[in-house]
Image (cartoon, rainbow, N blue to C red; front, side, top):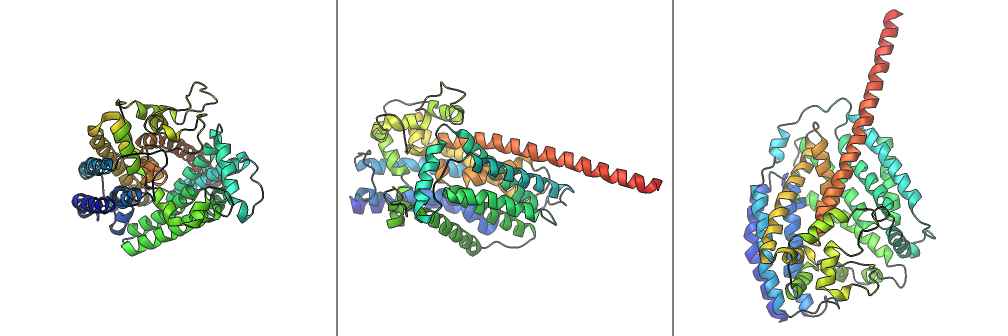
Length: 465
């Protein structure tokens, strides 16, 4: 069986490779040459192969399998075969969805608006205020020693239960920081002091609680904007440049993860002992999908996705009727009941993956449906993110897409783990980004009006004199 799983993994690569080659040939120049490595087609395909082609032999050998999943080996082959519907659904809509590429965007370059520096300053200033609110809302974290970092992480995660304002403050700070980064890239003289303070105020607390994803996402955004600025100036982005930047980000994320393992007795110790095994555990979508194929009895017909979309970010303090288990977690409880604690209070969640949710909602056709939807959404968001760093005018939609890309779409695990959670994050992060843009625009308009009024008064005074 072990050898057969290796052969089926190779077969999966060969059968799905034509779709990737098609996307690479169509999107290479449109994505900015080397930046194709960061685009959804490349990221999706790598994560997909890691889960459905590379991980199965380890699962069959018993090295990577959860205690609460008990599945026959034959389910692996069904999962591998049907998952290709999702991949090729993604390929079809990503190719067919109309969106401007880098060559078209470069033709739209115009001088930046005169108030761009004011907008960047407003974004950085508001980000600093949100970071201060985030730090102020944190619980007592104990001694600031390397040996205590894992305990600090646990304290932080426990504090998030019933305290959505902590998450919101951090999201506001990160969104405003991203907007300030993009806006300042168009300035001849960027507000450097405000930028340094804003970046420090955001990165230090998140590093303290080892928010690896947010730290890596912020640094990823910095590299992405620098690359777009280079493209804007007519320079080339090579694969080696992008791979070097990603290697640095991976090293930073790994360092934060290893620091957690210094706290004895915590689950992070496994990451400290064997980072490779910990990395492979992350690509567990195929195992959950196999379990869904076996245990799903009735189809949800989209109900779980609607529950995630409208309930995920409702504050329970206001909406006390909000259930503890709904959406993706309800499907987890139905498909893998052994993963849910007896008291219903979960310290960890195991959503049954985008593939499992698609099957649980609409059966085999759902796998094609979720691929088609993913292709459209990811193509539009990535195209908007490219526009944010190349075209300096009409920035509302591009800035919103840039924030969504960095915080929800750049990491394939964000949507491959749960499509319902992905939809809810797109909606909520979009609302937060729209609010942040409105605040920045309002402050910039008021500041610009005040500056122009002061200039007129000075001019009139000089005329009368």
